[in-house]
Image 1 (cartoon, helix red, strand yellow):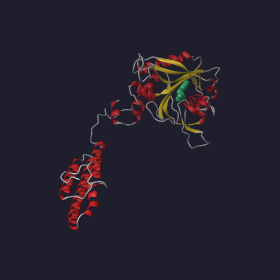
Image 2 (image 1 turned 90 degrees about the horizontal axis):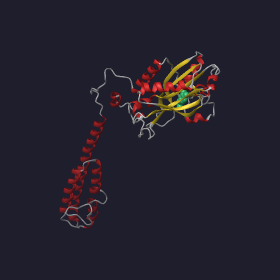
Image 3 (image 1 turned 120 degrees about the vertical axis):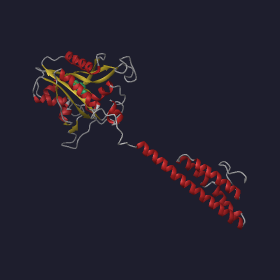
Image 4 (image 1 turned 90 degrees about the vertical axis):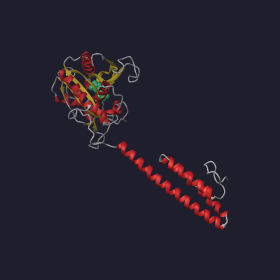
Length: 360
Ligand code: DAH
């Protein structure tokens, strides 16, 4: 052991202390504690200076080998040194904790006096604005706006839409059932399609209607899914309605919402309540159809489903499919909103970040 030099971490003392080595330890400890910039560094310094294998403890064990008077003198000096370093560590810890708390407070601070650039008295949420624009487009085409309720019975949400119990298409819409009535008979609607049934049951034909509203599914939120989201449903029932009318309607409203450069296309699809059914895509609004990350390189983005109303749906509501025919469609309003505004993540819409809310 070298008593002339301060004890370094890799040079643990093995024998008894001297007045000089204790003084050197204190000097070094003062420097280490004062230099600890955060609580982690202070913990490390404390372990090194006061831990089981640190100098004061090693020295304390070695005191027994000294003569009585020397032991008393060095023992006293050692205790005083240890107490001093313990106090320094505690004081420094208090200071660092205060700084850490202040930093947390500062980062969480909500300045209630801050004047945010809210335009006028406030404005509609982006999704509601897009919903109103969609409604306007359809009102302009002679449609009525209808609303259903967010709680439906199994009949309206599934069975009348040609999805009887055990139909495999039900499992694609993991549902929230309510604890009402018979087991699994009342559900938070999984789509806006049940409003079709209410309109058909009203028995006032022809029907030209769109039906916007909230729907619920047991989906985990991610960039393209929300468990609570908005759909808009369309239903036309008249005599002699054709698939061409459906295609023309979809093309008209996509151009009205996204602009004349955007094209719609229909792909064969399957929905129990339409026959034939189609998925409808629009050319990617981000890359203009050449292919990018948002459209996974294909140049098209899926928007919703559509098709000719299945005769079984008309029959389930007492409408004669020999006399009436029609088409239906449904798609997510939130998706339209993010695509039109180049927002990458659906969750942004519901996080209530005031910078986003005021910026769009
Ligand atoms: N209800 C369907 C869904 O949520 C969307 C849909 C597809 C609605 C086809 C329609 C339709 O009216 O004809 O996935």
